[in-house]
Image 1 (spheres, one colour):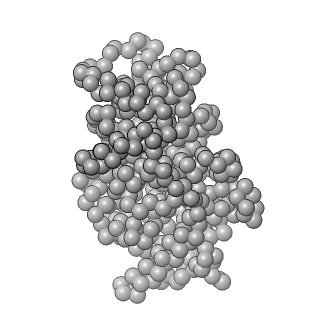
Image 2 (tube, rainbow, N blue to C red):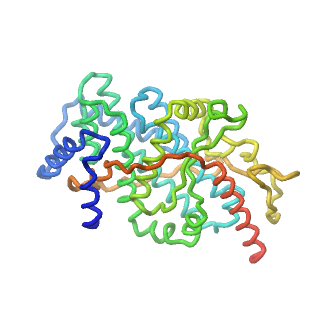
Image 3 (tube, helix red, strand yellow):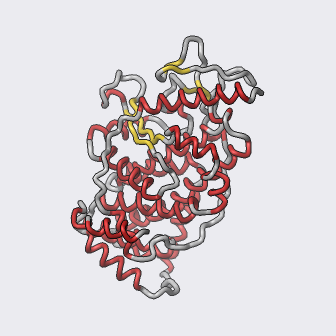
Length: 391
């Protein structure tokens, strides 16, 4: 972090919407000053709980579909944990991105190796976030059941000191927004350490022409389908709201995006009701047919091996055009066995709370037109590629 950036953040700290900022900073300073050493030996009951949490996390962390639905089920049990719904919706987008790689459009632009590299990148990040956050939520759930603070177990699950402090804060004061924003910061910082900065993913994904082209074209839209009757639609296909991520490799940009998505989802009760209603009604399969079956199908209706012909105009199929192929995750990719990450804490001192400060981010969610334009941009790229490099 640059000195000028730090100074600018500190001068705005008194404008934070979280009055607990200084209390959290003091707690984090104390925790950061603790001498590193071995963890305390747990009682038999506590060790059994930690083991059960790890096993439950492992069972739900099989693939994008299982982890995405686990987030939603947790939110329905504990709607005060706002991040669980935000994580569910963002993870749905992760699944759609995974199946896009094998879908009708991107599969024509990427080589087989590029497809495998992109999937490995997306799957590793999706797996790591669940691996980190779901145990935290289960500790909270057990604390509620026992009506006792069990967050002393978090270090045994390799949870960052940043979130140890914020869970304690939430248990005492119940600030749902603070906890949600804290989890956004934590998970993106965790992703930064374990994926984004890893040389393998830098070389195979983040520095590739295709990934840079994706950012250039604005293809990184995060979509939240809403029940149409709740958003002024026609009562049929869901309305899409969301945000566009311009620079995926930028940690501040990803955190700012998470804050905007949180504001979009939770600051308007009608939006929250419309998005939650859609999510509950529509199980996650990984296919974009989940939200727009008029445009996407999980069965390939196109003639195999034929040159691509444009199908879309303003998010409507041209006359006689087949729907775009968008497979279910189960038909696109198998389950992956992951290596455990090194138990390193991304938060090394109290400066890691600076992202809590208010960004005054605008949370306008009009993204449907941009998404439709994105689909047509991809179509034009395919037609251009096949004209230059015919099969």
